[in-house]
Length: 594
Image 1 (cartoon, helix red, strand yellow):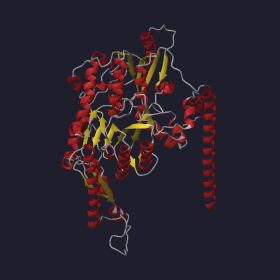
Image 2 (cartoon, rainbow, N blue to C red):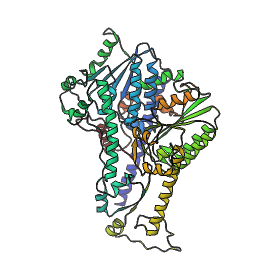
Image 3 (cartoon, rainbow, N blue to C red):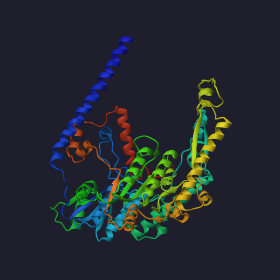
Image 4 (cartoon, rainbow, N blue to C red):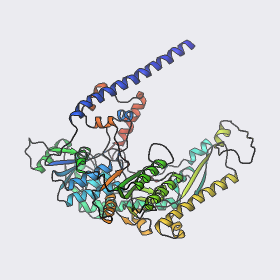
């Protein structure tokens, strides 16, 4: 028996090592195939009468995030263009006489409404420049449709649909499950509206949480519906009525009759339709160029700014943490801010914040570093993205001027902590008990094996209240408000940008470009004098593969779908399938607030 076990184990290990070796060989072959092409094609040129392709599909990140080679092989795609690339490309294309128009290919992109708001702005500016927009989708999701309504021609597949349903979200509550497991969540918080803890202690949404969620859902929906109505020449009441009728189940012809789309056509003939718009003969090819290629082509024209005296555009995207490699890592961000403060070439900074919050300690360190930046007599503006809430607002509040989109979720000025008491599970169900000996009372570290003592709970509550007092004092100082006024609108409540400006939490409604333009004007500089930080350095293997057409073919020949087992690979394919479902199968629009 033991012998068979070792033979089986050695066989499994051998198989594992062979799989790893094959993966390395496959990767080497793919990179080698790509090298030949990328070496020959180091530049991309934009031809006359080109059409910029705006591909709305997959997860749209704020800006480029380096990924591992394993992730790339597993996903089998280079990913969607970033919001940063899309905004830069469309804005540049508006003044580029080589770009005739934009083709929006709607595939159900996952992105926040504030991100869509900024993209909507540049698309409308593109049309104001006298250029055309063409849109197509197999089935329009609500968010994509709002953007597609900027198009002169809005085409739908003959068996496709348009989904208009309003804005909402469901919150799962885990208290019933925790009760069955014998786990209780011990909550320490400040803020009536700090609802992030509710799913662990309640069985349904509290009235304050429901009230705030209703308010920002209504505000965001009014923005979406208003733009759909204005761009399609419809009455707002008509859009609201459609949102209640599950219109995605209607026959496609009804969407033409209701003026939601201009015509029905299969994707196969889209090239012919765009060819006709350009006045081309049937045998002349359309020069399509995607966002990534266009950005690469225009980079030589200082699309990303200058390296001499300039405005720094510093991105702070993701959860705020004390350590790690993803999101806003406190020590790393402090280092970036300090370096920009000490750089004589940096005249000012626009701090782009897209974060739902995180570590209070890291937030304070970033706040202090920004104060250091201002001490160098350099202006600091903040541009808020989809979120600038909780810790995201903490690091924003000291700016000289704060810009937010109408649909930005901000505020949430509150503090909370959760400590599980798993004694009901560990002792009550598993039968595991602990005996403790202490040299001093309360000397043992916090544990999940039992409830907090009254003394510990009181100490933790004091700690949370101290952090809350510091947070609100930072806001009061930064916004020029008295502390009572801050606490009246704090309490952990989330506000949209349209309300935040009324409350004094932000100064202006406007996009990232609005903030950059304002700083450039204040410093008597050009909008081209902007450099993005931190440097988004693409890994060498990604650069090679991005320029390679051989990757897809090589991958297909090698059948390299996943370095993991078949079950995991299948699960990943299912997740990807769900992500790309049309509205009849699944609605993926949602709002998450930390």
